[in-house]
Image 1 (tube, one colour):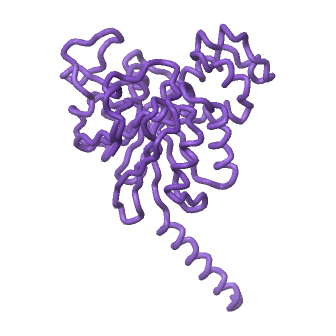
Image 2 (cartoon, rainbow, N blue to C red; image 1 turned 90 degrees about the vertical axis):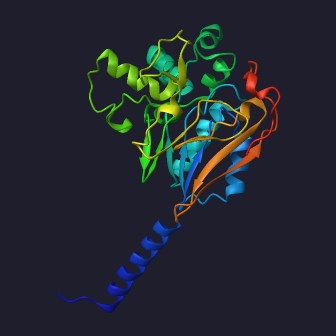
Image 3 (cartoon, rainbow, N blue to C red; image 1 turned 60 degrees about the horizontal axis):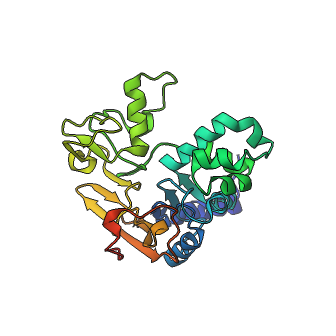
Length: 291
């Protein structure tokens, strides 16, 4: 077998390119966008996002509240089509759209928008407008969203973790048949904010004696980066980092950045307006700045 010098050189150059691409990879985790597409574009511009080099992860809730939900989904799809490594973790608002899809998929696949009142009853005031603009590939993107994403020492989820979850979050959907306990664990990844002191998930209307889930997290899955809790600043508690800085409420859109050398920091951009169709959380009424 004869190996030519040109072939060896070609292989060598490919290995160099692969090494450089790996070395240059950054992890960018974006907080709850909620249809704030202009702010997302501004944030990616500020981060100098490189579509072929950076790994981009969304903590969920691209939809609802903001002005451009369907356009945001389409924008993320375009990034994927252009070759970007984009991971979209499912949020509770995404789950609402998927429940709607499961109920009315025959109409939606034919691009027949259900009645306005029906959409708004399921999805909120902007539901009909968003649904009417969503295409088949947008639904496929939503259907493919995982409940969590793990890379290195970082786990990305939307909501919270119960300390009673002993398997890794990504394994929660390995089985097709779930017990009620298993379903509660799965749901908690998108919805949970508080736990009972013994680490179990409270009932829907339960409020007494609860503690933030972050206070009970023991670090078993490394650093956990999450959204779902809109606040005026990044929440850093133990080995958890909350990056929903309430862009749709007129505050900021934030990204956590992990450099190739594992250095972690965050960047944010200001919201252009107050978009949400409901009142902001009480803790945001007097504070309008973010770390």
